[in-house]
Length: 370
Image 1 (spheres, rainbow, N blue to C red):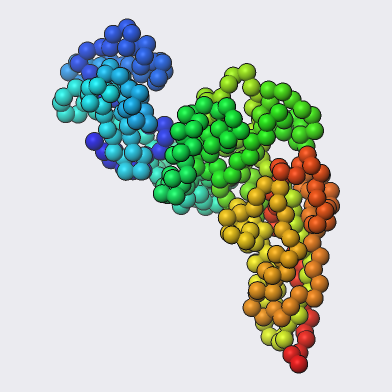
Image 2 (cartoon, rainbow, N blue to C red; image 1 turned 90 degrees about the vertical axis):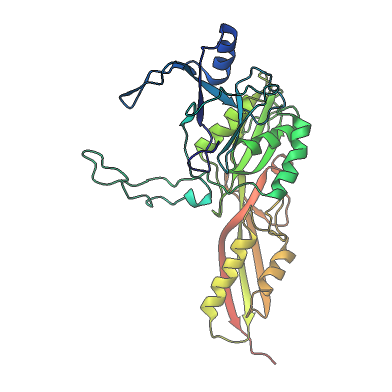
């Protein structure tokens, strides 16, 4: 069967009308997976209307990633969230629903998603239905969390890691991989063992049993910061897969702002304003923590740009003859500490920060070609 609309977002409820009530043992199994209320009579109230089905019991079945671990009496189904296709077991791996029509329903589900749903604040201004005493609406906060379907390259990277961690967070790599699975909004993760970066942002104190995760959301912002909702989602997901004796802290990245002050030589004065904007735009692209860098895949944790990288970048902008002077300053965002770009940060934060584009000053000097 297929859902009427797709893609199907997580949190759906699929129910099957069964002729007989599950046994006491099966009821406990269903309620352990779907919670109290997963089994209801076929006569139920839906929006104030009594729905009569002529006997039987509606039982909420449980979504499984596959049928490999399902037994003959397990009420499991597999859902392709992208296409909305629902598959059931074969009687050996997963129970077969009773024969009939109208006996399987998606009682509750949401559809939509993708990056198109990430709209800015103040974008939603239309009421889809009339609400008494409500004249207008708007979203005061931007919406986020939408992402496109997983690509083949991502699947090829994720699948071998899944075989290694088997949905249990034990090693540093396990924590990082499982945090990526918590939400498609998570793009970068750094696991720091034996530190509580929520209580001790610099990680000075050694704390046995503590694990910290630094997460970076998928964003085009110059300085991507995870929302409280995303932090809670990652923490809740890891709580299901980690050891209960370990304490977990989930935080956003420690950013280092990179400011550039440069003077460039040009051979003509026409379009100087456009050239200044082009240089600043090139610096912003190059210094983006997720999509910048020499390869365009973002910056490694703890890495800052070399002056030679910035010289080559600025001189590649059309209209720039050469760079006359270049001053680069790295500023720790949390403390305001200014560090010259060529000086190493202290060891305790060396591998826990990301750079981002700050304020750039571009001056132009005319030098006629000889």
